Image (cartoon, rainbow, N blue to C red; front, side, top):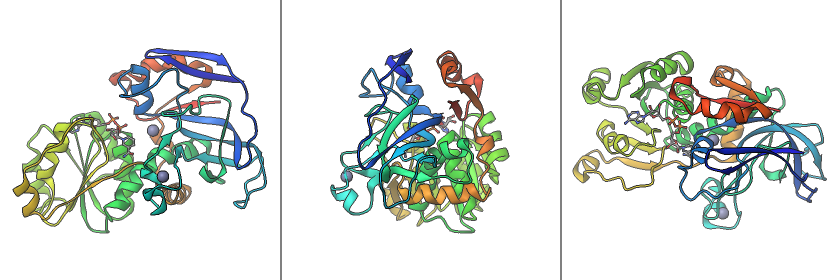
Length: 337
Ligand SMILES: NC(=O)c1ccc[n+]([C@@H]2O[C@H](COP(=O)([O-])OP(=O)(O)OC[C@H]3O[C@@H](n4cnc5c(N)ncnc54)[C@H](O)[C@@H]3O)[C@@H](O)[C@H]2O)c1
Ligand SMILES: [Zn+2]
Ligand SMILES: [Zn+2]
């Protein structure tokens, strides 16, 4: 079978690989779609910390079951599925408490272990989601949308609440869409006007703020001085994360969806006077995937327009450099097999 290996930063190679052998408890999936995300782009660029090469990338996966043994979940050959790419241990304190998304021994397909840029992959049956009634594209974007859905669930967003989402990349867009789905009034903030415009068109956000244009004053005006009760930072930018403490209402919640490899400091009186709740949000659980599946199935989130670029499997290598360029305006690139 064919596979694409990222051999070192900047270098993909189409290779002939050995097909996976059937393992009890696992299923062999024929990959049909691979969504490309920031992690893949960083790995290709060589600026993903602690990343080991060679690596088969790809963790936003949809396909069809090629082979599966007896299983209680009722999976059969030919079923269309989405793969939850987070291999968790099932035994650590987080897993035992149902927080498999932050397992102490987390291994993500395509990051810590070879992922889905290949014709066939074997994955534990427990990590499959049946995606009957969804298109393959929709099935492949359950993963990035689940990151946003998980963050919104963490903050327990309620109808009527005013929410600010900073960072209008594919992750922030998912947060916006699910906050809107909860009935919140959503303000999007970014430094990229094209992306802010996209938030209005795609996630139907209520307001946008350019982060360099007096954000505190704009938030004061929009919220009558009350400020958003939930603020999500999905920028991956330390400065934005530091600033975001100032945008939270008294009694409100700040959720760090984006992450940085550095320290974030904050002023305690600003934090304390608000009795602020500060949360991290990492990955997603199976129930987040199932929730996203239902919302996408009923058409309440426009999964189709989330995919902005596409390429057939063997043409992907030639497209990748293009997708790295800001002027290509990629939100989600999709590889088809
Ligand atoms: N929680 C998780 O499990 C999880 C999963 C995947 C990705 N992430 C993280 O989420 C973050 C976002 O991912 P993405 O793929 O959407 O990234 P992205 O780079 O496509 O989007 C980030 C957006 O933030 C904007 N931005 C940057 N600096 C800003 C600033 N100072 N003020 C306002 N906006 C600013 C950028 O213009 C961009 O539109 C990254 O840090 C990524 O590592 C988290
Ligand atoms: Zn991803
Ligand atoms: Zn665990």
